[in-house]
Length: 380
Image (cartoon, rainbow, N blue to C red; front, side):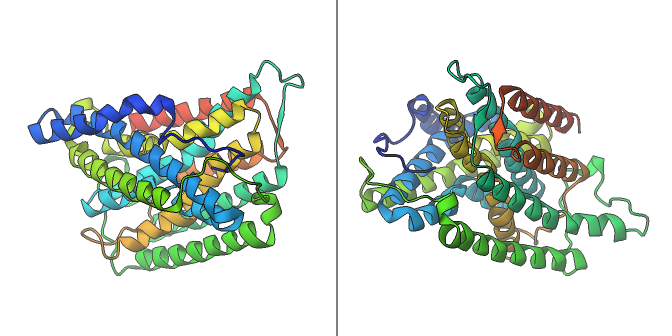
């Protein structure tokens, strides 16, 4: 989310406005003891307006703060909905759903959102060359940070796979994808803590890199911005929307288990696909919209940058928060499906952004890969 010459004044994009009705609907269904499927769907839809307002408030607050502090605001609050949802689910004991939703956020950003952006932008009728161009240096830096973060995140799982029983076989198999395992006090939990701390320190260094030493690449100086909310209004909207997201997240997570059974889906699929998408659907839409306006550099910054932030910041913060939230600490031991999807998606994202150019067909291929992953997760 980068401020333009004139910021929109509405609380949320027009297409999100009808979804506001889902807020009272979710509360009403929850209090009335209605079908958990209905409660879950209503709560999931209700997350979108709250997330959209948080994104809009962050955008306006950033515009008031200048490019340096504004960039910090964007990267700090950009994935706040996902963080809130993860912490609420963690407090209710859904550790595997939390891990699945974090992995799903990365996959959704680098495959679904990036793919849709390339597809929408590449089909512009006035695109004579058939390709869109973007800042290759910035895109490569974002993809590199994501790849390094994912490399660190998979190591606890690799250690567990190799050392758990001396045979290199997983202790958490296909039949137990939704079952959290307590690694408290073991080497895997120690490794998780070390990885989390290192990633957060790397994230902090990345902020210095993008906001100070190389700010001309990532956050070019902006001119006067029209229509920005006051700081007070921005902060108030951010707090109110954050509270609504937390409330809807609690209702969503509370209905998740029974809703998943009723729909014939696993909690794993719900976490890695459904929860991951609704948590930041509004920001995802922004990426596609700006790509359609031939602002592909911004679209990549939103999609790949958001994925990198999930891996570098949100995931380790949730892992450290689990030391005090929930029944026991959450080790970063991902299952085989998550590991494969993370590694493949990250390598693919780096490959398609390396040229500094994109076509609609590359976007279609990214979406196709996401669909393949989705079907695999459904059948898991």
